[in-house]
Image (cartoon, rainbow, N blue to C red):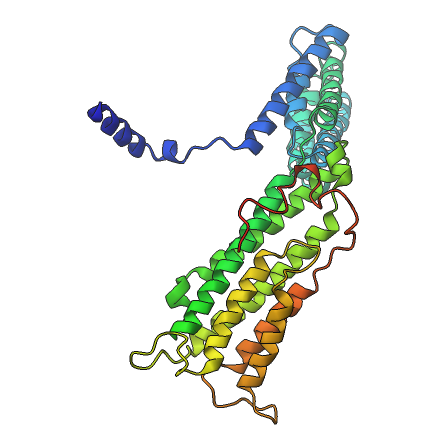
Length: 390
């Protein structure tokens, strides 16, 4: 039995693609919708048009199966427009010029130029394909090949759009909330690391690693992408959860977290340029023999981490008012009465960035606190969270 397990583990490690393969719900859901739309389009053509193998209908339905309802509408319009333009180029050429090399050159040139229109998107490739199809078959097979092909494509586009819009239309709210939660967690962990750096007298890279700023940038970018996709999934979506989702709040939360991330990067750069003095002799980090501003700043960074993790809209974290008062006291510690920097071991610019971060967190307000639904609608994670940071 042990040998079998070892052999299985070695086989699993020997195939890198297998070890990385994961079923993605987003991809499988889109594949399921494409399959259903293609099958339904095939059945409708067989029942209504009497076609035995209506592959153009199935092809059109699966090509416009996108991840959101709005994208399906756009893809359907682009696909239909591309095929229509191709027909308008190919049919006149085959009638006026005939299926010769000159007509072929004219069709290819005009169709490729038309396919480059940005409004057609990646469906512009169907312009030359349809144009050549119409050019080759348009003169001798207009009634028995071209017209049924066009009708089947029209049925496929209509069925594909209706299927994606009415039957389980996708709503990408949960991934957006997860991306925001990942950003909050990473930002809070970064602040905890900066607090350790201040407390131990080290640079930010010595505590968080050399790639911490890039990882934070990636988390911000992923949150932007997930939130944009979630907004798009709301457009023209008939699901009740889409109608009840309050998205202005999440845009505010993301903008606030992004502003705080900018201040955190600035604090990290200051610590890399001039790390605080380490504890002298046998003094422990935060010992009273050190500069009190350093211990105060470390505590304040950790309090800010709590406020960041609680930045979910509505009322700010209960620690925020106390943190703002502590920041004002810290500002007094690192400046003299004349407002000039005091000869302390803490850069006053660090305190200024921390003050701005706390101000950003204090600006997040829920403009619709009396609404019973969660800002993310029915698909939201519980706002109390399973990973409540305490």
